[in-house]
Amino acid sequence: MHSFPLEELPVLDPDGLPADAVIAIDGPAGSGKSSTAQALAETFGLLYIDTGAMYRALTHAALTAGIDPGDQDGLVALLTGSALELKPVKGETTVLWNGRDVSRAIRTPEVEAAVSAVSSHAAVRANMVRRQQEMGRLSGVVMEGRDIGSVVFPLATAKVYLSASLEARADRRFRQYKQRGREVSREELTRDLAERDRKDSERDASPLEICPDAIVIDSSDMNLARQNEICARACLVNTTLDAQRIDDLDEARRELPWHYRFAYAVMRTAARFYGLNQVGNEGRALPRGCIVAVNHISLWDPPLVGSTFHRFRVHTLAKDSLFRPWPMGPFFRWLDSIPIRRKGYDKRAFDEAARALADGHNLVIFPEGTRRAIGHPGPVRNGLGILVQATRAPMLPIFIRGSYGRMPGGSFLSPLEVSYGPIIRWHGLDALLETTDRKEVSRRIAHLCEAAYRELQARSFARTPQTTFEKELGEVQLTRFSRRQREVFGG
Image (tube, rainbow, N blue to C red):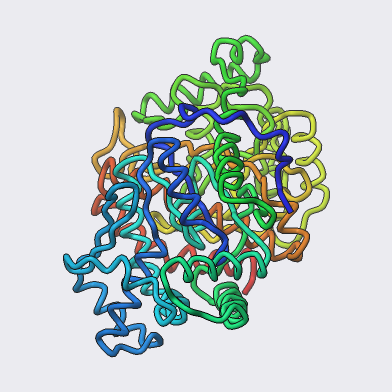
């Protein structure tokens, strides 16, 4: 099935994406990801990075060296000590292993049969993900694989999950081998693909799965030209929706009632005093109707993050204990806060939050549930996924850094920064719910939010490296905050 009506996809515009756009293409083996990714890179003027070829190159090197595909330590040692490069040459990607071109050698049935086992190791994937992220941060890219949207680039400009029936994929793979002069059995290919699907979906490390915000395209009945056109149009959906946002700062300020003006003025004064730097939403108002998901490291987080808001009305889910001492309860209610019981499912709080979103208001949520150690965001609780499934409201991830170690005018201990990610829209949610239970869907939404925090944190550390203060305090907090997590939520 398609998760977005094909007739509603934007008209294809080769200039419709920014130069630093990241396109993530995921899907099962044989779905045509590589061909489509290369076509998208050419259409939008982006760099194509074949992540599958990276794992195949390691697999080929391991088989050549006599290393068992199940030997994680041996594979990591081989990968760590080797140079793996991808170079675009005449519209194709040349794969170099220690300077030697292995582009053809990695496309054999022997490599195909072993690559899933090689790529299933967590340590191997972690090494590869680091390499892929480094490549992707250099310029606009198109990446294809099985966890690009969920793990490698959770904040990708566009995500497509490209699928096709097992029979259609077997036919395509059969034609590919035939064009290369290799004789293979169609029945054997079908069995191999089915087994590959099973392994890829059941592995512990980054299994193949539909990312909740990916646009799902079933290309079973499409030729390659049609498949490429539909995927290119799908890549423009988020940027088209972003262009329709109403986020004019002056207009937003004119809408504010007096008590919001007062609260924002106080919060902005505190933010300026401590030298807060806003990244990713400068000069723009908070868009309407979003779940604003903020990581949590300090009691200062709400007012500091709130200093970057300029939109009426913003509701906040806050722990119910904050409302008990008078006059804090009336004060927080005055600011449209919603008390929530942190342990268990608080139906009253979630219903009130859902009503606020349905009315077009924003909802601030700290989905980790309690404060987390600096430098170690997550885990995100299932409440975020429950709320997303109930409302379909888009999510705006925000990462705060430096609310510890504050100093007037700015701190050398820890830079005070509020980083906005892109709006995450749940294009793939209905497709997921057709085959996946709601609890698992909530888990995937939580994991995507965690990955978004890690990516925003990595970008912040790239701008200003993590300080000694942050590292040492984070390590001290790990034990203390983990204990608090167990006390609050059990387990």
